[in-house]
Amino acid sequence: MNAEVSFFGLYAPGLLVCAPLAYLLTSLLRLALSALGLYRFLWHRGLFNAAVFVCFLGALLHVLSRTAL
Image (cartoon, rainbow, N blue to C red; front, side):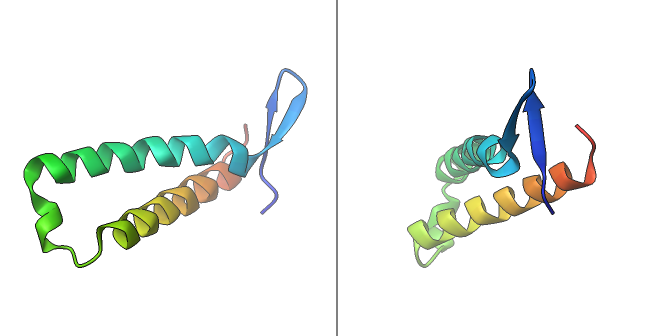
């Protein structure tokens, strides 16, 4: 799983590309959960947010490694 993305001949690791996108998705989910009041059902908000970020990052890296960019 060595996913690299080429930007005009400059190769960047997949993690560098996927981390900001995973953060954006996590932020959007965090805003939605906060607006709907669903955070009250969670035990530890910070751990949940970190776990969601890792899940999004893993999913994005998996998709990136499966597609040829």
